[in-house]
Length: 500
Image (cartoon, helix red, strand yellow):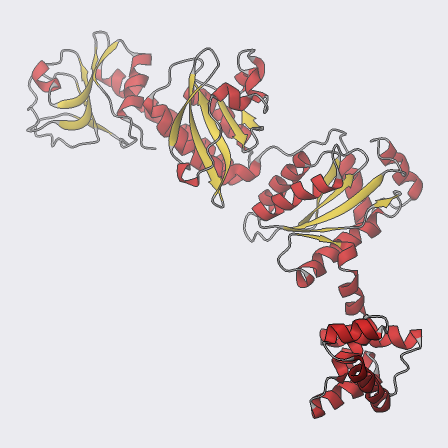
């Protein structure tokens, strides 16, 4: 891993009695150690190590590099470098070299560990824990609602930092609301903190052109350095990739989601057992419930995405059992225990679906605990047929797709032309041959419950014209429009032929 001159100088100050001259650069451009010897070619963005600097040739120009001198440092040499570290007496060239190797190894190990965590599916909390040790200051990752997603242990135990976990107080403690501009993604911002008059570095994390998270390094144990900002940006990039690994949600009542999953899978079927287990979590037969099925169209990293979305839904909707079923997510909500109205819950859910390009099917509201699987099937059907009937919506209600469901079931075994009314087919054929308006006239007439005035008004024709058309319809196909069975069969046939 490339590190900066500032990281090297800070590391050397921890290990040796030394003096830093100039301002070491914070850009991570150095990846090796060069010994100074006769004929050395001076280059920028390097770290040079020399023991006896009295006889080395001076660079022709100022070099944007860091030079480390063990022993006496000639002033004329120091003037040719942006920064220098002079190691005072008591250290040997070999000891300083090994100390430098230790500094490089520290950052290499950190980079290797967080990349290994990313590859193995560890959550971001593990990355925060490892990084806290490197930074020497606490870290906090929160979402757009200021809810803490992951944080250093110090924040959870230190009385001065615990308020940062209060999502209601966090914006006040920062003196800065979360900026919603995606242009700020990946750039460092300095936040004044109302915590012992400290400050923090923060990086905004954007997903799908929307601000979703903020990673903050808090100045608490030691002063912040410019190189901390560079490392924080790097950590934010890895966090962005690993954000699907947030810790898995644990329901307020452990085991509820597992029990619901067993019911939906068909492993738990006896009504008495179902009622007894769910009553243990406060879910009673007389309560009102709704089942949801979520569709996630992610072709890569599907497992980590499912875990992350499951956690987000569970934290967003209280009193919900959320679990993975196959390659989708199922949620069952207890509306009696939910702390809000149904309209509010649907609004929150719809916004989440829209922001994350997802869709969900929702069952009818129901009571009782022995029909959970059947209402889960309602949600499945709503998700399957909803996008066909309402392609621009995100949330599909079962009661709004019953008509498409019934029409689809009518044509499962036979095509529409072999299921619908033969008389209506004859009328449609006549209409097409003679360019008449009889087919549509009959549809509007039946739709208006045989009301002549309403039908004539909708068709923009005189009632006399309508009566004449109805007589012709009767002669052509002989449909008995006064018979209820004939009426619903012909209306059903109209709907089937629409989807032909």
